[in-house]
Length: 279
View 1 (tube, rainbow, N blue to C red):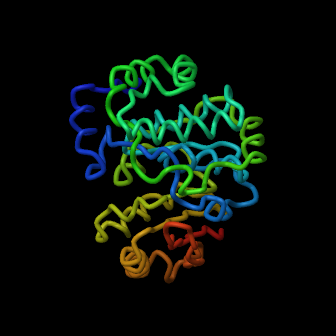
View 2 (view 1 turned 120 degrees about the vertical axis):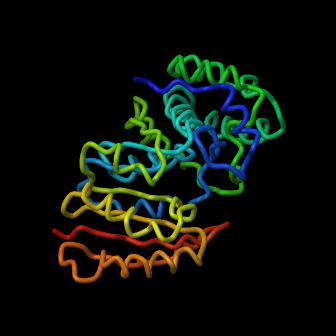
View 3 (view 1 turned 135 degrees about the horizontal axis):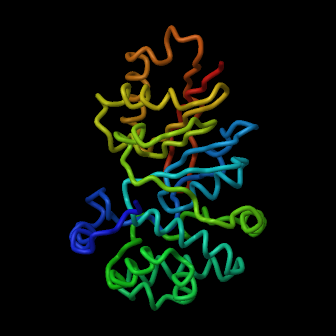
């Protein structure tokens, strides 16, 4: 049965702003991560991938870097809406229109302009699933997409050549699971060659790191990878310790665990760990 949003709860959670993560928490307009680097860890043969929906850029870049099929998940329904908006925009806007649309979506939406009054939004909403379209119209005066930094500041909008490649590859919405990381494994029904857990462990109790990773490892194919990414350097090091305490990396000949490097971003430094099933 399809998820039916509760408008009363949605308005309450959205008013909580960036201090809250939940079913209706505000979504990012554009990623603040250098996905051109982190998606470089995708295996050469990647049939199935699982990534956080976030701003919608994670699945797009995952497809761009070689994943044939991409499933997505997020704790926020607004993240699904943002992701679906970008997929529709790819199919009806040219590159310059797409960039202007994202700029307007970030700037005007944050200036309390109703989302339905943003240029091109009516055209895009008409192509979204009815449930999402009705939801966005009903909450058009709230800030559904106001987390993070502007597209201009982050610099992580697809280039013209990347946009053309995405237009040729992405013609339908991504499959989406509405769940948090703690319950993610309960929703999975197949295995993956690549799993990207972007900045999620920054918001999980460190005592849960080991069990969460163990719950996901059984859904990784031989040669597949789980990539975890951190903004908080303190969490970064705690994760490394917990991985070894849980014996996930030690004494397990089927898996290789390593900290590859730190991604130097314009705004943030992202610590990346890669857990690879070697056989």
